[in-house]
Image (cartoon, rainbow, N blue to C red):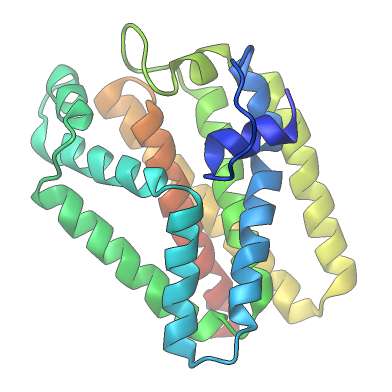
Length: 244
């Protein structure tokens, strides 16, 4: 299982396709995929364009490169929780391809939050690299700690069912190394902002996972998508707090 397999699974990059075995091993590479996506966002931040335009382009590029399926997961998750009063009903709604009012409201608010944060943060290209890294790491935690919520097969069923606690180790080492390198490479204020970004992202993930366990009994592909988008948005907000 290679980084290329993870890129093909998480992005739209046209890499050669093959049948995946032991999909859970893809989790080792999730943060690195996030770093690559963040690199493209960093390039957008360098464009000689007005700040609002660059902010929109960062969001648009992220959605395009991932085929928007994390946003789709957030929309389905919001509809399921908002319209389903039982686990079975919530999961049935999440499987429906139509988007309801809860999806529209949640996605709109999240987009506005990301845009508002980026208006202040595009002058700190570091954060547009870190946020997608943190978001993919939180997906690793979600897949490794909670069971798969549906019976039978689903989009992320093999990934989640095969994931064990040990699959957190390598991504966690990546996070520790990243934060250690940042401590050496950037000034004290930005390093504190990076720690705040990670902490707020982590707390948001814990809240989402608590809700998913209570309402659904575990995670699905939609929950993993919601975790990524919400934790990435929280990372942007967390980076702003020490700079306020």
